[in-house]
Image (cartoon, rainbow, N blue to C red; front, side):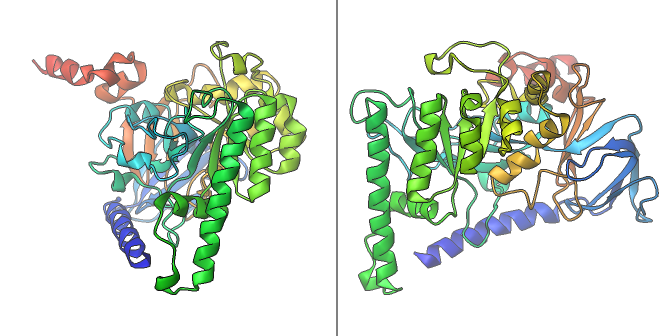
Length: 436
């Protein structure tokens, strides 16, 4: 079992090495822009130098630029880190089936189309890293996957491996509240939902104990169970639970379960976070909020409020925003934090809530989420102030490679067109007609 894991990890790292080795050989220096590092002060007339997929220098106009660097004048523009989304459904993947309501063995990465043009929607919004989830109609719908939105033909070329030692590149999706309340084998009631999760984690603890008792003796090891292996990773803190939850009582149940079994959790959606902001802060668990400009839909979200961001900031909680795309559109991700600012949340909290705070929720803040030396060269070039309604995403860069450009007619149509361009590839038809 250990040997197989190492072989899998070696293959993934080989893919990563291949990607980085293809990054630009000549340094690129972006000059003249207002740079928002998120960590640290903003820099007027700044310099950002990237090379071989990483940031090698950032500073004011006096920053040393390598002699052989290509210089790009971006005066009048704004550069900020590539945006990080902790909850997305792009890529046309799926999760567990109706055979049971708990599927810790299911991996959404096995069903994602890496060539899906839905990823263009995220690039058009300045997103560079996303957490793709299986659905929330189950108590446990499967393993999530952390992706860099690199152009790729195989999913391995998109993986963001946050823990190379343990080969972790995703979390585990769980849910409570209304979504899993269906006929058996689903839970039917909220209390039964919690009971079923407790029972499953008790089994995982027993499986974990058998492994520990074997002390490396293969003859004493329990029969391999890939679902239990995933839950043991959760119990050992290697894999994060991303927990769909809306109502204040469901939020507290999600926290209670994580405390009972000692696993790490990110609360997703938390429509009524403002009602229990102090409790969330006291528990020390992060909350990934969704922002809405048109309320309604689910009864359990009827008390939703965009004031949750300010409430969590005032309580001293760790929080960010997500798209849940296609519930909200990745192209408008900057607007999520802007709507919270309108309710009183600070601008600094808004910047962090789309970048470094979310990177921390994926264990990826050592790689992405801010503009700092030695981090990945993931950034977005904006036409102006990030939270202005007049601002446009002009370019999106990942690891020193430009992956989206509004000046490119094909890319621009993904920013301005309707959803039909994602469903039927109308963009390709349009480009061919233009050539004729």
